[in-house]
Image 1 (cartoon, rainbow, N blue to C red):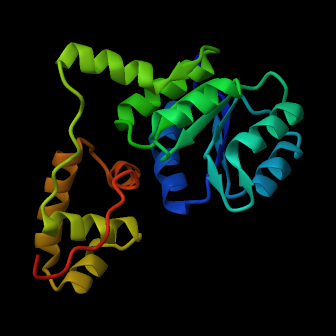
Image 2 (cartoon, helix red, strand yellow; image 1 turned 30 degrees about the vertical axis):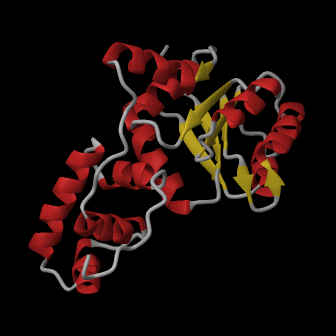
Length: 217
Protein backbone atom coordinates (compact mmCIF):
# COMPACT_ATOMS: atom_id res chain seq x y z
CA UNK A 1 0.00 0.00 0.00
CA UNK A 2 1.32 3.45 -0.84
CA UNK A 3 2.40 5.06 2.45
CA UNK A 4 1.29 8.44 1.13
CA UNK A 5 -2.38 7.36 1.03
CA UNK A 6 -2.67 8.93 4.47
CA UNK A 7 -3.98 12.07 6.18
CA UNK A 8 -1.54 14.57 7.71
CA UNK A 9 -2.29 17.39 10.15
CA UNK A 10 0.11 20.31 9.64
CA UNK A 11 0.15 22.73 12.58
CA UNK A 12 1.85 25.94 11.47
CA UNK A 13 0.68 29.55 11.50
CA UNK A 14 2.38 30.59 8.26
CA UNK A 15 -0.09 30.35 5.40
CA UNK A 16 2.51 30.46 2.64
CA UNK A 17 4.48 27.63 4.19
CA UNK A 18 1.29 25.60 4.57
CA UNK A 19 0.57 26.08 0.88
CA UNK A 20 4.14 25.23 -0.11
CA UNK A 21 4.23 22.02 1.90
CA UNK A 22 0.83 20.93 0.63
CA UNK A 23 1.99 21.50 -2.93
CA UNK A 24 5.08 19.37 -2.30
CA UNK A 25 3.35 16.42 -0.62
CA UNK A 26 -0.20 16.15 -1.96
CA UNK A 27 0.77 14.85 -5.43
CA UNK A 28 2.47 11.91 -3.71
CA UNK A 29 -0.29 11.03 -1.27
CA UNK A 30 -2.58 8.99 -3.56
CA UNK A 31 -5.84 10.30 -2.17
CA UNK A 32 -4.65 11.34 1.26
CA UNK A 33 -5.21 14.86 2.58
CA UNK A 34 -3.15 17.51 4.37
CA UNK A 35 -5.26 19.46 6.86
CA UNK A 36 -3.73 22.75 8.06
CA UNK A 37 -4.16 24.30 11.50
CA UNK A 38 -2.75 27.74 12.34
CA UNK A 39 -2.90 27.37 16.13
CA UNK A 40 -3.11 24.86 18.94
CA UNK A 41 -6.84 25.52 19.22
CA UNK A 42 -7.34 24.82 15.52
CA UNK A 43 -5.25 21.65 15.78
CA UNK A 44 -7.35 20.23 18.62
CA UNK A 45 -10.55 21.16 16.76
CA UNK A 46 -9.31 19.33 13.65
CA UNK A 47 -8.57 16.19 15.66
CA UNK A 48 -12.00 16.27 17.31
CA UNK A 49 -13.82 16.21 13.97
CA UNK A 50 -13.33 12.45 13.95
CA UNK A 51 -11.08 12.48 10.89
CA UNK A 52 -8.35 9.85 11.03
CA UNK A 53 -4.83 11.26 10.91
CA UNK A 54 -1.66 9.24 10.37
CA UNK A 55 0.91 11.95 11.10
CA UNK A 56 1.03 15.33 12.83
CA UNK A 57 3.69 17.85 11.78
CA UNK A 58 4.02 20.47 14.48
CA UNK A 59 5.80 23.83 14.51
CA UNK A 60 7.51 24.79 17.77
CA UNK A 61 6.31 28.42 17.71
CA UNK A 62 2.54 28.90 17.63
CA UNK A 63 0.48 31.97 18.51
CA UNK A 64 -1.32 30.27 21.40
CA UNK A 65 1.00 27.51 22.60
CA UNK A 66 4.50 26.14 22.83
CA UNK A 67 4.82 23.28 20.34
CA UNK A 68 6.30 20.79 22.78
CA UNK A 69 3.56 21.48 25.30
CA UNK A 70 0.95 21.02 22.60
CA UNK A 71 2.54 17.71 21.62
CA UNK A 72 1.58 16.22 24.99
CA UNK A 73 -2.04 17.25 24.43
CA UNK A 74 -2.05 15.84 20.90
CA UNK A 75 -0.79 12.50 22.14
CA UNK A 76 -3.78 12.31 24.50
CA UNK A 77 -6.14 13.22 21.67
CA UNK A 78 -4.70 10.77 19.14
CA UNK A 79 -2.65 8.12 20.96
CA UNK A 80 -0.50 6.11 18.60
CA UNK A 81 -0.36 8.75 15.85
CA UNK A 82 3.23 9.89 15.12
CA UNK A 83 3.90 13.52 16.07
CA UNK A 84 6.99 15.15 14.57
CA UNK A 85 8.41 18.64 14.95
CA UNK A 86 8.64 20.69 11.73
CA UNK A 87 10.40 23.89 12.70
CA UNK A 88 12.56 26.80 11.65
CA UNK A 89 14.23 26.64 15.07
CA UNK A 90 17.37 24.92 13.85
CA UNK A 91 19.75 24.84 16.82
CA UNK A 92 20.74 21.38 18.15
CA UNK A 93 19.06 22.13 21.50
CA UNK A 94 15.63 21.96 19.84
CA UNK A 95 16.30 18.47 18.50
CA UNK A 96 17.46 17.47 21.96
CA UNK A 97 14.25 18.84 23.51
CA UNK A 98 12.20 17.00 20.88
CA UNK A 99 13.96 13.73 21.72
CA UNK A 100 13.45 14.30 25.45
CA UNK A 101 9.75 14.91 24.77
CA UNK A 102 9.68 11.61 22.82
CA UNK A 103 8.74 13.23 19.52
CA UNK A 104 8.70 10.79 16.63
CA UNK A 105 10.91 13.05 14.56
CA UNK A 106 12.33 16.46 13.80
CA UNK A 107 12.42 18.09 10.37
CA UNK A 108 14.03 21.47 9.93
CA UNK A 109 12.42 23.92 7.53
CA UNK A 110 15.90 24.45 6.12
CA UNK A 111 15.95 20.93 4.68
CA UNK A 112 16.10 20.39 0.95
CA UNK A 113 12.50 19.78 -0.25
CA UNK A 114 13.39 16.23 -1.33
CA UNK A 115 14.71 15.54 2.17
CA UNK A 116 11.44 16.79 3.66
CA UNK A 117 9.55 14.37 1.43
CA UNK A 118 11.89 11.52 2.46
CA UNK A 119 11.38 12.41 6.12
CA UNK A 120 7.60 12.43 5.81
CA UNK A 121 7.71 9.11 3.95
CA UNK A 122 9.80 7.62 6.78
CA UNK A 123 7.43 8.92 9.46
CA UNK A 124 4.36 7.63 7.64
CA UNK A 125 5.96 4.20 7.41
CA UNK A 126 6.08 4.05 11.20
CA UNK A 127 9.76 4.85 11.69
CA UNK A 128 11.35 7.78 13.45
CA UNK A 129 13.17 10.49 11.52
CA UNK A 130 15.58 13.08 12.90
CA UNK A 131 17.17 15.26 10.25
CA UNK A 132 20.41 15.81 12.14
CA UNK A 133 21.26 12.16 11.48
CA UNK A 134 20.55 12.69 7.78
CA UNK A 135 22.59 15.88 7.64
CA UNK A 136 25.52 14.33 9.48
CA UNK A 137 25.53 11.42 7.04
CA UNK A 138 25.49 13.75 4.06
CA UNK A 139 28.23 15.89 5.54
CA UNK A 140 30.42 12.85 6.09
CA UNK A 141 29.88 11.74 2.50
CA UNK A 142 30.57 15.19 1.09
CA UNK A 143 33.33 16.05 3.54
CA UNK A 144 31.61 19.33 4.38
CA UNK A 145 28.37 20.90 5.57
CA UNK A 146 25.89 22.40 3.13
CA UNK A 147 26.61 26.12 2.63
CA UNK A 148 23.92 28.76 2.87
CA UNK A 149 22.58 29.58 -0.60
CA UNK A 150 24.31 32.66 -2.03
CA UNK A 151 21.72 34.94 -3.56
CA UNK A 152 22.51 38.30 -5.13
CA UNK A 153 20.67 41.36 -3.73
CA UNK A 154 18.42 41.37 -6.83
CA UNK A 155 17.61 37.71 -6.35
CA UNK A 156 16.89 38.30 -2.66
CA UNK A 157 14.48 41.14 -3.53
CA UNK A 158 12.60 38.90 -5.98
CA UNK A 159 12.48 36.04 -3.44
CA UNK A 160 11.20 38.37 -0.71
CA UNK A 161 8.39 39.47 -3.02
CA UNK A 162 7.65 35.86 -3.90
CA UNK A 163 7.35 35.02 -0.21
CA UNK A 164 4.77 37.81 0.14
CA UNK A 165 2.63 35.92 -2.36
CA UNK A 166 3.06 38.41 -5.21
CA UNK A 167 2.58 37.37 -8.83
CA UNK A 168 5.27 37.97 -11.46
CA UNK A 169 3.38 41.05 -12.63
CA UNK A 170 3.14 42.42 -9.09
CA UNK A 171 6.82 41.72 -8.46
CA UNK A 172 7.69 43.58 -11.65
CA UNK A 173 5.64 46.58 -10.51
CA UNK A 174 7.09 46.50 -6.99
CA UNK A 175 10.71 46.34 -8.18
CA UNK A 176 10.27 48.44 -11.35
CA UNK A 177 11.33 45.57 -13.60
CA UNK A 178 9.90 43.92 -16.69
CA UNK A 179 8.06 40.63 -16.21
CA UNK A 180 10.68 39.00 -18.42
CA UNK A 181 13.43 40.15 -16.06
CA UNK A 182 11.45 38.86 -13.07
CA UNK A 183 11.16 35.45 -14.74
CA UNK A 184 14.92 35.43 -15.39
CA UNK A 185 15.63 36.26 -11.74
CA UNK A 186 13.21 33.56 -10.56
CA UNK A 187 14.95 30.98 -12.74
CA UNK A 188 18.25 31.97 -11.13
CA UNK A 189 16.72 31.84 -7.63
CA UNK A 190 15.38 28.32 -8.26
CA UNK A 191 18.84 27.23 -9.42
CA UNK A 192 20.62 28.69 -6.38
CA UNK A 193 18.10 27.21 -3.93
CA UNK A 194 18.04 23.84 -5.68
CA UNK A 195 14.27 23.86 -6.23
CA UNK A 196 11.93 23.64 -9.21
CA UNK A 197 8.74 25.49 -8.24
CA UNK A 198 7.50 28.67 -6.59
CA UNK A 199 6.12 26.71 -3.65
CA UNK A 200 9.45 25.00 -3.02
CA UNK A 201 11.27 28.35 -3.27
CA UNK A 202 8.92 29.82 -0.66
CA UNK A 203 9.49 26.85 1.64
CA UNK A 204 13.28 27.18 1.41
CA UNK A 205 13.11 30.97 1.60
CA UNK A 206 11.33 30.76 4.95
CA UNK A 207 14.50 29.31 6.46
CA UNK A 208 16.82 32.11 5.33
CA UNK A 209 15.48 34.98 7.49
CA UNK A 210 15.66 37.39 4.56
CA UNK A 211 14.91 41.08 4.68
CA UNK A 212 14.32 43.17 1.59
CA UNK A 213 17.72 44.58 0.41
CA UNK A 214 17.78 48.27 -0.51
CA UNK A 215 17.13 49.08 -4.15
CA UNK A 216 20.67 50.33 -4.71
CA UNK A 217 22.30 47.14 -3.33
